[in-house]
Length: 423
Image (cartoon, rainbow, N blue to C red; front, top):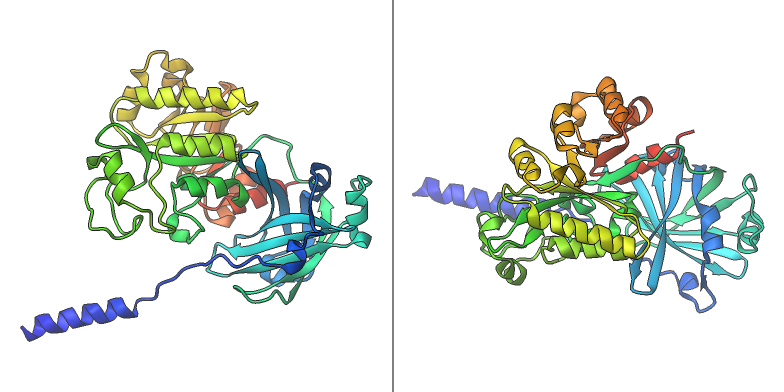
């Protein structure tokens, strides 16, 4: 009895002492940026800000350089633009909004290092003398001097550490490339501002550097396709509620009413809700549906067709591919009428890619660069996306030495950095 009590006490002690890590997105309050005199930037003023910049101040924290790229989130007719800086060191990024104040440009936001829980505020300025006047007057030309100065801080502290970024060259765009982020925009374990596979994280994906997303697809007991990675409901992904067992054992109404995702209490989204967000609210152009269901794919095919058509109707080109991860899904895919013309990505050996007439081959990165196989795929008019590349050294190697057309990663900021800084 005493032994049992001791074990129970020890368990409670260890649980109570366990460190709970979190990352709270810092405040972006900056009175100057919020003043009525600070006005939105025009498209003509935003465009010149994209490029590769060299750090002088703050290089010890963020590395030697960064690639700056615009993205947006739309809400009806209201669109918010974000300038993200993808840094060389520690998978760090800044996400800023921009405004003009007289002849200066203000960039306000926050920074985060994905290699740790470090984060903080960032406040940047392009003064009239450093390029602000020329940009705002439409007189800026490649090769003109452009310098961004300002400060960053830790957590919610007032930014007090200097930053200086000098424009070096345009972003690399010589070959098409897809930066595909895992689980809709990133994994819950990385303490992002929203839960993995949520509609909310889909809206953030392009700010992290993604051009496309991978989403984990399951089916409820009443036949509603939803986004959820694991087989079972667990406290890794959802807030504690007493519900256990396979997610596919529950109806959509039960999941929607009783389950909340762990980061921000979001609902588990349906596939339609996620695609609605992607098509109408983001600049994302590619989706990999990681098919974790082993039944008919007819409904998935119908939804795929519907949302590619809806994107085209508003002038967007969006590619949605059905993932084929195993032989069972392959058989179900090939049971679809006209499967040869259905966009898909096949993770199996190249012979099965041909069998399914998949547009994309998706091998795992542990198999290596596989240059002859990738080149053979290209000769057939197909593409090759490798998964899942997370370690910066591996990303750099596969980017510089490989012939892949896209990377799947939990850290799209790192992929974006190594892609855009190429020369």
